Amino acid sequence: MDDFPIVPPIIVKDTPKPRRIGTLKEARDYVGEAMQLGRPAPWRELWQRLKAVTSEDEAIEATGDMRELLAEEDLLLPSSGH
Image (cartoon, rainbow, N blue to C red; front, side):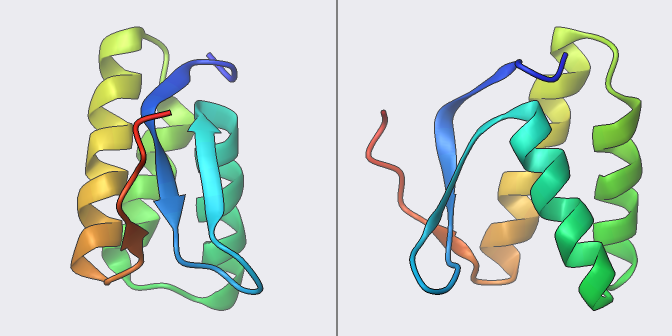
């Protein structure tokens, strides 16, 4: 499931430039890096969900939750669609 596509890609506020997350693996990598910085419980829950994905439905739900969490934390940038 690592190469499961995220459509549209998630664009995250990051320095020095925005970060594009286009696959499930990239989503896991991003959240894993965020966890090293120390994040609250919703991040840990998302991390567990992303690691436990075994189906397309679970991937869609987990990446949707990621999008919501990033929006709540004001880290989500509008996606251009591709």
